[in-house]
Image (cartoon, rainbow, N blue to C red; front, side, top):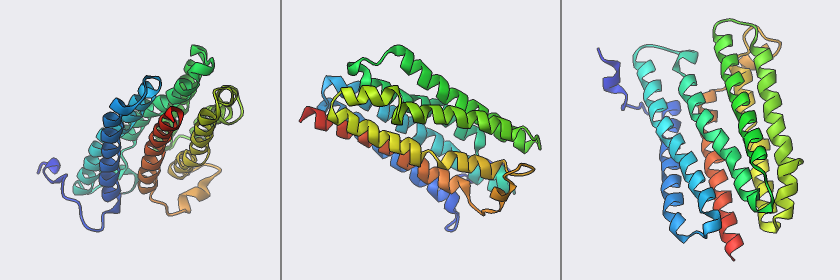
Length: 250
């Protein structure tokens, strides 16, 4: 039987698939809103708002396929980690997280942000994601290198966090005016609080055989947590940029 014949059938108690569906619809709606508001946005902020729409649009497309993947695996009789669309999720992050870092460059560009800052943030985000993915793949193959790859990923994350909250991005945002400084502060809190679900998910997903093995006993459905966190982080990023474009205009 072709398992993909039933991928649109979501059971009433399938909360994982339900959050994939809600995440897809929420981010698609956010994309439509950001794209339609481009015409009412000053030229200085059009690119930033466009990037916000692209971020949520990319995520919406991936969530559509991740939902179908999860349901297809259930129909095929799979369970546990086999239900989680790890590969698709990391492809989504590899496209959207660097774009979220681009936003920091765009809002501080007028204050003198250099292209080097942009590439440093992008490189750090790529390192964070590639090493995180490799760590999860290693863990699924019962490889004990998950701790090493996770540490490298965490260092890249802390670099981004430092630049935004205390480093060059923070300095540039402060010199760009109160509206940009406030927006950067809000985006920084998204990185600090919103992004923390990702290392928690990594620890829970790679805990077997590691020093943090207790994370495997948390009983968390990380797909549901990822789905909610992704929607809040990506849509929230875009709404902060939207608010910045309006407050600056005023």
